Image: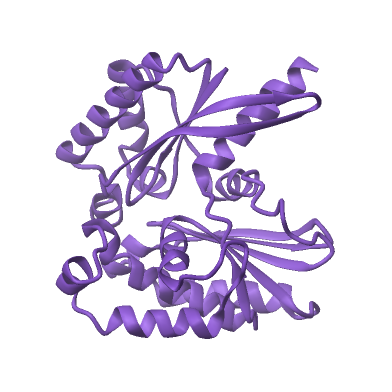
Length: 295
């Protein structure tokens, strides 16, 4: 049995096709294929509050390709979610309707809190001591989702309109930064020793660049040094010398800024990076939906 997850983000759109593995009582999944297309919807959505015809066409073509791949792989169930760029574009729903008509994919525009819930469903915490305190930090192109856990219980969760594309386009607001800091201070005041858990493409790339061993958290100090190192290169050199993809080389800097701000504000010394993201959470959500209804 195969499931597919589609994540229409502000920077890239992704398709994950996964094989569902049933082993006695436990159900897991194995990734078969992961495709990422840098459509950059955020540039339109945050600056002009609408998706341009050109971007809409690129998005629909990507979705048609995803639909063809899902058919070839004989996917039995899928879920497609769009996040902050489509949330903010005045014509977001109109574009989603076109995707349904032209690519036969039902794209749901999810709210920030729901996005945080899906990301949490990725089970990033599997190898982690449940009795500790954790702040989940997911940084996307348009928004940052923060979820605070203590003893395995969710204490607080909020989505903030701060993201990498938004910062690059100078569409981030001072009051949003302050609102995020206030949220962190208010909810972490009483907790000692909080660990970070970072999800999203940028932190995964930063973790790879840090050359940490698997399952070892990255320290705040190391992340800060990495940020200074990357920042010392021009955009061109981050692409040509460091070998970063075009659509990663620019967003990685504001992503660092968000992670460093959150970690510093919450007094977090190290961050776990389980290299999962929205698409993993969507597959897990599908498993939970189908498995609990079947049993």
